[in-house]
Length: 74
Figure 1 (tube, rainbow, N blue to C red):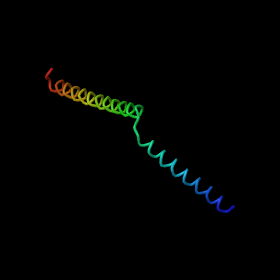
Figure 2: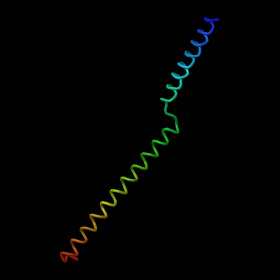
Figure 3: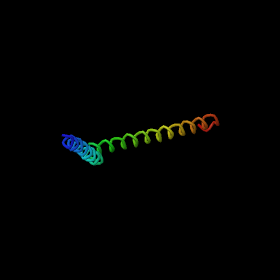
Figure 4: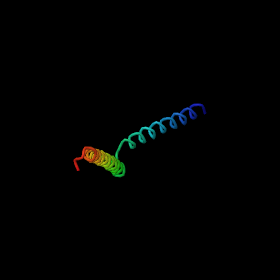
């Protein structure tokens, strides 16, 4: 009876190891949803940077206009 219990326990342990290794290998693959998510993240980041650049350009333009107004250039 003791040998049977030992084999049963070893079978459970080995099965758990194989399942864990298989799950680990599946988790490494990138599917279409992962790729789409990364593209959305990149697009959002690019949009944010474009907005920041436009805001800086606008701020520079307002500063230039203010300098022209204070200096009597307009």
